[in-house]
Image (cartoon, rainbow, N blue to C red; front, side, top):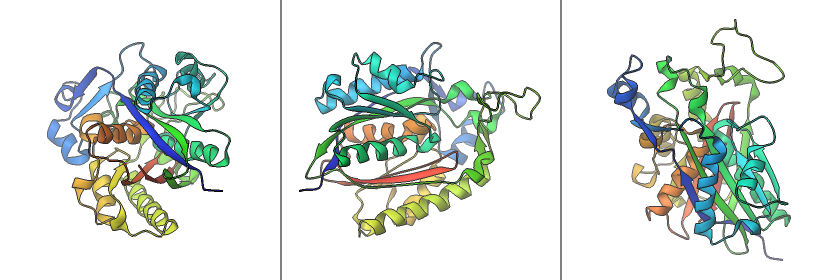
Length: 325
């Protein structure tokens, strides 16, 4: 029997209407456009409106992906949603999204792998299709990270934004996802984490207490560069490819310096790297599908091209996906 691939049939994305520039942030905290841009490459980010939830963002991105794929929501066999900012503890945001799409019956669940959430979700969905358990799957990465930002902490509040991206995967015997590679190291959790939860509770007297992102930026940067270097080499070796075979690198949009370091490792000019961090900031699990949709709709990414997707996030988690678009 021919191998079954999971092919991206359509992409979609959504950003909240409220765009916040570096200059606007400088009115709230001791920072400047030059300080932020020189260290991160970020100049703008989007912030969800009051009452606008992760499910709302995921819904709009999903509708656009379904339309691009020519697929009706009733055809879905599975919904996998990567997020670290669910609307509520349960049911999952994927279940809420399923209801918003007007369907019921297909499987739906969330994946929490922080900024690697979409790559993890994509890998899981691909396995369902390859195993024959599903033929049409909606994969989403969506976040409202600004809900857990300390707007007085200039080291973190300048980095993050809200947004969502989605893809529709369909079973195909000719082309699609070639391989995915997932990794984690829970021993580094305190370098990038939100220490509030249901089981551990909430200590109001703890340092940096609150539902907020705590990050040791320099250490995260070093670990991210090393991990992404390793997973890129792993991906190429697993597929018998040379780094020059890659048409497009579509990385997690956290920091321009990390993106540039990965591109240098691949000996890839920045003209072949999709960069949206300047306009979106770090949207965590939403960043890779957002960047993919921007590249597809702008006409840069074409059918038949080889794409390398990669991400690194809290956990630590990291991973990659190589696919023939």
